[in-house]
Amino acid sequence: MSAIPTVPELQDQPWHLPSRGRIGMLSLIIGESAIFTIFVVAYVFYIGKSLSGPTPGQVLEVPIFNTICLLSSSITIWLAERRIERNEIKAFGLWWGVTIALGVVFLVGTGLEWYKLIYHDGLTISTNLFGTTFYSLVGLHATHVVIGLAMLLLVLVFTLMGRVTEHHAERIQVLALYWHFVDAVWVVVFTVVYIVGR
Image (cartoon, rainbow, N blue to C red; front, side, top):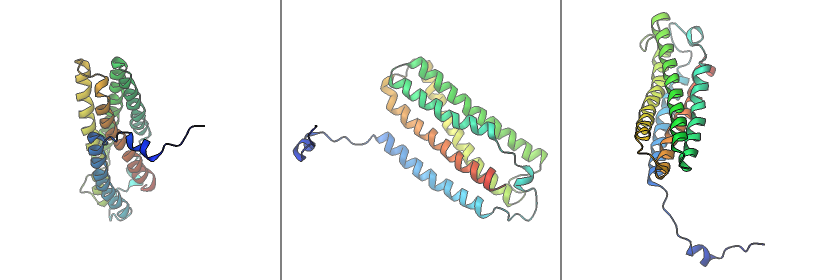
């Protein structure tokens, strides 16, 4: 039976400050969560209050394929994180590239959805309250995906140049936190816009 450590034994163990990168990223995520909360609350508040059409039920299609792609990217980036910890750089680059590809597919799907809504259904940001809140909320999320993809692409370029090693694992994990945040926000946006709001 192992003995419970005494107070002096615990005091002998060095205490390490949390990673500045993780603290910084978590602070950013908390701030961004507040912004998304405001946009989600506005969307929910204005559901059904548009005085003219089109309405969400008339024009929105549930983006199942796009959602599967984006949520799958959380798995692929996690796999990339595991590979860089083991210094398997080629495997890391592969999973990192797959993550980027899934994010790009999601963005293309969002662009095609917007094209249909604007040019086929006549829904713009100034059409009605639904248009205003829809493009604001989904556009805010898409902007975060673009920012995330830019950072992921930069890491991929450095990886292909041979500049990324296992010593960068901590930084990669910090960046992956942002991507997981973007995916988690999509779950909320998807639920509010395409399930509750229709």
